[in-house]
Length: 352
Ligand SMILES: *Cc1c(COP(=O)(O)O)cnc(C)c1O
Image 1 (tube, rainbow, N blue to C red):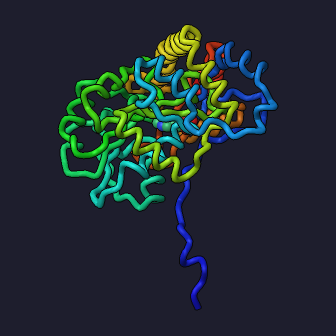
Image 2 (image 1 turned 30 degrees about the vertical axis):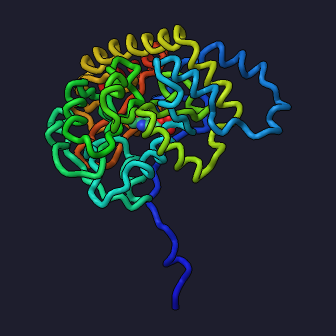
Image 3 (image 1 turned 90 degrees about the horizontal axis):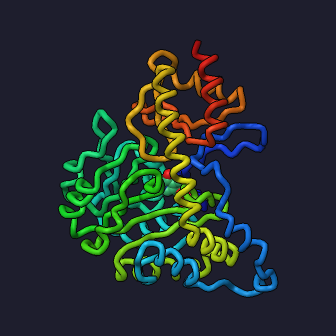
């Protein structure tokens, strides 16, 4: 007998980091920003016209698109916004990776890429990072249906220099190359200037990390006008109103406050550099991180044990059971200086 279940699209979903209900914890497990959103966001929320919620929002999300375009010196037609970068990346996969050839991404990377590839039935190949967790450009010099990688990479925090990115794009002019810059504001170098030179380059960024707005769900793509138009057409074939009115207004306010944004990023960078020296003192090793987290392994104590001890003490970090190669690592988000002091005080005592 046939079952309706045979016709179901079965997928293995992405598993997001835990969001514990308890309030008395130190949360260093999902790379959120420890600082509040820009003051302008609070003002925008207070002055929101709730009667306006009767109406559909602007499907083109113009006020937010314009605010982002202004910040980066782009034309509005070069920006696409969505419900977090997970949303804009999912739409970009659907739009841009439409060939029978495999798309390429690193073997150790953001674990949503293979989920989308499987969801859309896009073939893919994982290109191994080298022993220092670096992306090696030569791995991407082969036939493919598209390329995506984060820069800095996740969960390693390792940055790929712009010249290497350009070499990858140059060798792959007949496919779309997506650089996922979720963490680029913490000391990385954006590939955005290359958008003028390469019409097959797409940059993804998010308000979730450097702009302290993970709860608002805002992400965006920047690229050539023609490419953005294709992506936009797919969005309109899916859901015209992805961005709600609150997200549009608060996102605009966040985008416009550049000084606050830069201040928060530099505080996190400062804490990260201090944290690196504390990690070293305590017997951890790691590749250099240019993101708001550090990916560490201890020379004596297994990662799972440290993870469990931290959780029991109400300190949450992220541990990935697979792939095997990173199962002895912990990804620790950079919190406030005070949070990190408590974190290291616990470790110092625990590792004694
Ligand atoms: C956090 C993250 C995203 C998704 O962020 P959103 O909250 O959906 O904007 C995308 N890519 C990478 C590499 C990330 O770490």
